Amino acid sequence: MRLLQQAIAAAATVTGKRFGALVASSLLATSGIVATSINSSGGLSPTAALAAQSLLEEHPAAIAAAPVPTPVPATTPAPASSSPEPAPSPEPTSSEPLPAPLPSTPEATPTSEPEAPEPAPAEPEAPEPGPVKHVFLVSLASPGYDAAWDPTASQMPYLSGELRQEGVLLSNYSLLDAAAMPNGLAAIGGLEPTEASKADCVDYEACLQPVETLSLADQLTTARLSWHAYLEDMADPEGKPDNCVHPEPEAPETATTGGYSAKLNPFVFFHSLLDLGDCAENDVPLSELADDLKKADATASFSYIAPNLCNSGFRGQCPEGAADGAGAADAFLGKVVPEILASPAYKKDGLLIVSFGGVDPAPPVDPAAPAPADPLKVGALLVSPLLAPGGTDAAAYDPYSLLRSLEEMYALEPLGAAKGTKVHSFASAFNATETAAGD
Image (tube, rainbow, N blue to C red; front, side):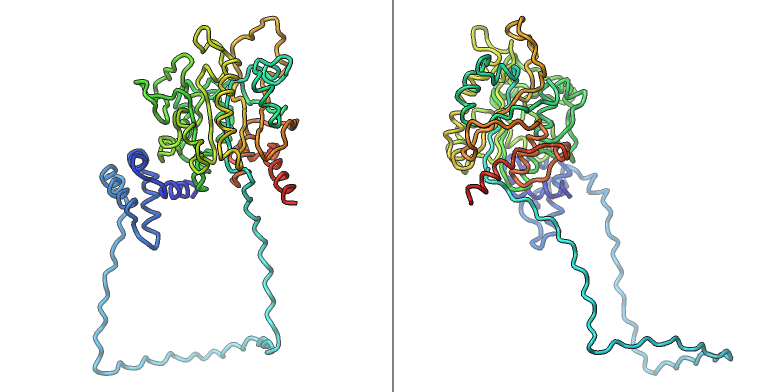
């Protein structure tokens, strides 16, 4: 049923190239659209008719295998008889005495009223969306908690100084693993780490999720909300900007030094997004972000932003002589964040989340520096016109908390491990702000 709902929502906006990708890649999705149209009062829509024609052309074996209903032969009425039929013979009487009648039950008096049925238990009310309507999530590689947030030791002066003063620091935000993929898949799908994801999914198929495994992006599409993932330097093998770039099955990724890598793009690991064409339409190069920010109605409800390997903060990935590691990530924030904060969507009802989706595995800049007590404690920052600036939230959060918070903001059901009873959400901070403003 969840897949059918997703197919219905996707069919409502299927056009052009996306429709071609849908029909060519997913028999399941196309069949769902056709079946939905057949069962509707209006019959086949032009989109569903084209889907049915493509389904017949590309999957004749599947159609031929479908059971065909057997027609029921029409019955011919018997001719009227000219003479009456003989009356049936009376049944032979028995010499046995008839059984005594059962005692009668007294009839209810006209004034008596039937007992009223017990009222059915009230169904829980659906969650209401919160005041935040546009979320911008920037994912980076952590240089360590102190190197990011401690003003006296920070290697990211823009983040720890200027931007920190405008938002709320989640001081106990921790990762599930040092690798990027376990945290990325958890943050958008509630998935638990696996051996393959801990290896950053070098085996692409080992991390590829079946079509019934949904993501936050699927939920947003079903709820008629928009989403975009913006990936820096995402391009085809010829170097031209391209959408939804991922390794081919049974082929290792050939990422260039400092460039785009699928390990920074968790959306390409969900068949539900690949097969319905959502990834091909909404997973785009970062260069498209600037235009989408110009108008609120052109800005997605949820925007996921990931720089390339160099600007994410992985040391040893940048050109010689350029800022490297945390310095490169801080410079990226200094360029992109002001554009987001100046956008109409952010000013109206936006939330910027600066999070770390992995840990830089390179050795520290100063070999004599002590190792962090907990390398997975990385912190995160919330910046919004709906929050009081300069605050700190010391509750325990992780990527499941991030997903749970986003789902509560959009009134969506939690996915996977995000529904755990011990998973904390920071969405209530915005509801409290809204209530206080209303009072």
